[in-house]
Length: 136
Image (cartoon, rainbow, N blue to C red; front, side, top):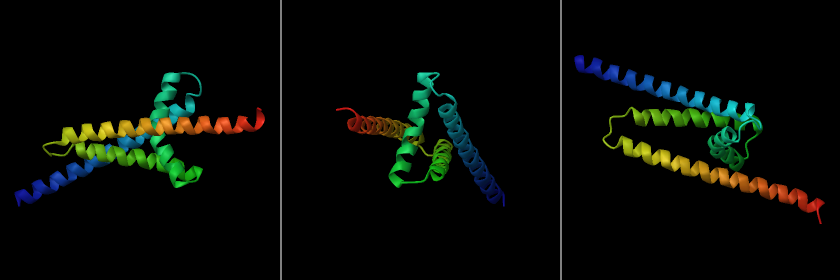
């Protein structure tokens, strides 16, 4: 009976941590969205930071050809899921969880940089196309 109670308590603790981590990811996504919307031209460092964290979800929404409203939802779902996964891994009892977290964090950072560079390249190419028709 005691082991059943302890097991149930462990499941509740894990579920609670997962929900809190998902909420933390959602709040992080909201902060990034607010930085992007409210920091229009004030601080280049903050603008780069918000662009960095928004690059991968933005590139994924473009690849999926989502509408604007669906893109907003996808952005928040992305950060909620990412927060949940990171929280779940961080609270797990696996022996190599820190290595897995470091590898996942590194991979996500690299993917965000690649997405940011791709979006910058797409913007530059779009500007060239626009001015190619105007300038000789």
